[in-house]
Amino acid sequence: MPDPSDPKRPRLVFPGSDADSAPARRIVSPGADAAAAPGPEAPAPTRRPGLILPPGAGREVPEDLPEYPRLRPLGLARVSDGRREMLLVSDPTGVIQGQPALSMEALPMLQLLDGTTSLTDITSTLMRGSKDLRVASLVRDFVARLDQMLLLDSPRFHQALQMLRDRYHQLEIRPAALENQAYPGQRAELEAFLDDHFAEAAAMRERAVPPAAAQPTDARSATAPAAPPRAILSPHLDPRRAGAVIARAMAEIGPRQARPLRVVIFGTGHSLLDDLFALTRKHFETPLGKARCDTAFVDRVASRLGESAYRGELAHRDEHSIEFQVIYLLRLLKEHPFTIVPILCGGFHSLLAEGQTAREAPEFERLIEAVREAERELSGRTLYIAGVDFSHVGPRFGHPPIDARVKDETEAVDRAGLTAALAGDAEGWFRAIAAQDDRTNICGFAPTYAMLRCADVTDGRLLHYEQCDEPDGSTVTVAAAVWG
Image (cartoon, rainbow, N blue to C red; front, side):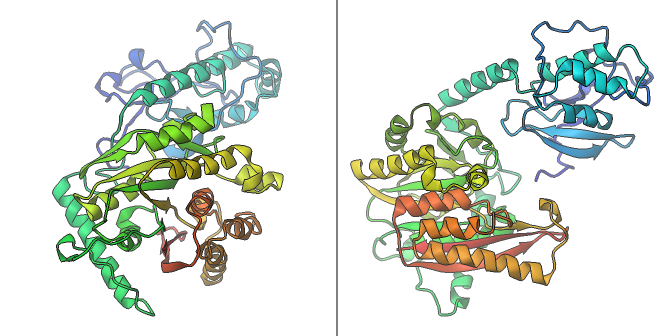
């Protein structure tokens, strides 16, 4: 999570603030015109206690206002500017730059924007709590502002989303999104950072019972090229917390290969909402250089998937689950040539809600078959990586504070899934999580399933399992595993 003290973090701009001094990525509250925000001495706008809408009844409301407005999926977090509490909006699609802030009093209004309640009915509901005759105008003005800010599921938003998708798809390079946040942005510092993790991974290997077979981690000490494993499971938790576990998984590859290596990386698409997967054919830029995408492989897969291949591609822009794998690969393999095939996977929650399995999702099945077919048709050695975390439990994830009993139960859930995965049993992996209705929030559910199906592996080895505790009493669990 970004550091709130980061000077590059966008700041709130409310009526009464100095809009001219704000950086490009500002956070503007609905109803406030940033260009014409009143100066510091201007009195704050007044609101009637029973009125939950911002002022602005005099604004001209567009004629194409949705009659049944629906608030689209957004993240809402309660924050304070020191004077009042606000709702800070985060956009999983990335269409909105910055994070708009809504008045806390707007929450009841937002809850009415479900796509089934008309503007007339919303007005009637709000009129019961206010005698202000302006309510009808204020409702329409507020909904219009939300639409203009692209917060509604409306034609205006979908047009903006498609334009952004088209522009992003044309880019050849994906810049690093997490440098200087989750890992150093300077090459020398990042190399030292990663080398420390590989050293910890070597110590982790030595402490294993029974001791794991050693893979040389220094290319100068490797006397012969090593054959890579078939598949690896590696965390995508912040490298400052789980970097040694990521390095432990990557160290199984070995630093030297007999020939160029293709690495298909299935990552968790945390911001994928309705899509089960998202491809990209971009090269990944990092402080260590560029990881080149195997565009021929991606194109083969995309040709089988049609429009759905890149529908969710924007999720790659800020996603960390593949980016973290790439920096460890670049440091480990150094000058050895390799390419990546970046594929994000969404959640399986809709399948669980319908009582279905992954094999009963035709689109996801097409992805599996397309990847396997592309590997058969194209030459080269292929390694599969699932960049995943396991359980997410505790207050941060909507649960009560956890105790030793909950931690033991969480580990039992994790290990039930791992047992099936290590046997190469993708359907057993799915069943183990579905049987619990994914109650521990395993965010590697879909990527691990995809990796197991595509790699077609058996006889995996668990390299490490760990519960990473957080200050608020929450826990994220991670694991590293390898299949030969």
